[in-house]
Length: 108
Image (spheres, rainbow, N blue to C red):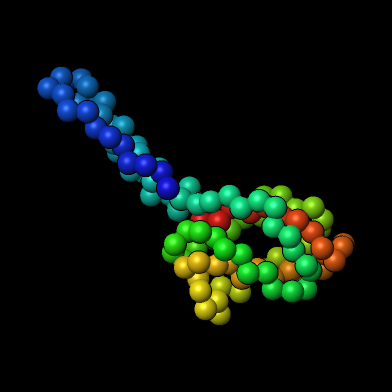
């Protein structure tokens, strides 16, 4: 989670304008769902089986991105039927060049 911008109380007009602009910029940045995420590394995958990954977001995830994988493989999620979407990502895999691989992913 990106922290909120902390304003400093000031009677200086220039400083107040800078803080207003900075506060608005932080609001825009904080509203981007992809930035409110978590990096999960070293996930071991057995191809052809569902992998349940604890995402730690405390809410249903909005998406995920594989950022590193040790072998070629296709991935898709099973979130539509996931009984615990606030806590986990159900990840499926197929068509890999090996039976096991390791991935890192960004969940948001």
